Length: 384
Ligand SMILES: *Cc1c(COP(=O)(O)O)cnc(C)c1O
Image (cartoon, rainbow, N blue to C red; front, side, top):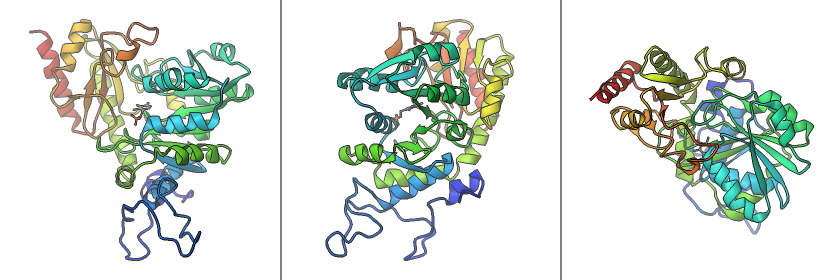
């Protein structure tokens, strides 16, 4: 598969027709156990489904092929994937260095759950290479980054941070949820591991929760796989199948998400209603050059600062009709959120707080003219 290009791999990797019936789509293996041909005589290694399921295996093959990884594991959610990765790689006394704008759930997992087991965590401004070097410690095992970040779409240089992390003997993990492998391949830029909330762009249809760890090589697979097997946060067969189905259209969806978001960012840049437009596809964005170097498109996420302030931002977020007010992102339908009180409510009042005049858009793949008209009618309501 690796000789084929991305869009082809997304459709064919791990997706051979059913050898028994010729069904073009591999079936959903909705089973908890597999019959053995004599004691220990496993077929294709399948035994009990906490350790493996054929539908999940298909998805894992597909995920590894997309990210250019050696292998992948599929989980019940993005956070359970992160949890297994962290417990697989870390022990008491180890330190994790996080970007200061990582997903709030990642920060919560480390500081509220794993801290009890002796893991320490600090955050750092990842755009500042000297600050990263200063924050690294002998016991730092993992550097963890997200780019573009949530919700201000900050961009950091994956290759540069990989070099800094490796020089200190740490492993680089990239949460590639926002870009998706259609736009950015962290393993090819020096990252050791990639994690995903497949709930977002990979699933792509807001109908399934899931997560993944993709391994650049074989160093960590058995440790993480053991955590998954011993604890059990596996993706269910139907969930794995839905994710596989979503992934087949990832390349074409990401192209349209990016095109629509770029058009909305340019529309918003021309309007005095917005004091800031956070979108890496704009030449004025501080991370535009790095994004252009390490991404093949700028993605579907963008944030807007309302010039009229916090109340206007709240009213705006409650006034759109096509953009539905909801948490999450990455589906075909457009969503709007008010990070201060929604996704980022837990960091209000801290250094990680999001400005209160900011709304976040997950731009879907509807007709972009309709989307802009929706934003215009919501702006018109602010005047009332
Ligand atoms: C949603 C999300 C997660 C968590 O994934 P779940 O599937 O909700 O558990 C992690 N990282 C990022 C960037 C996310 O957007």
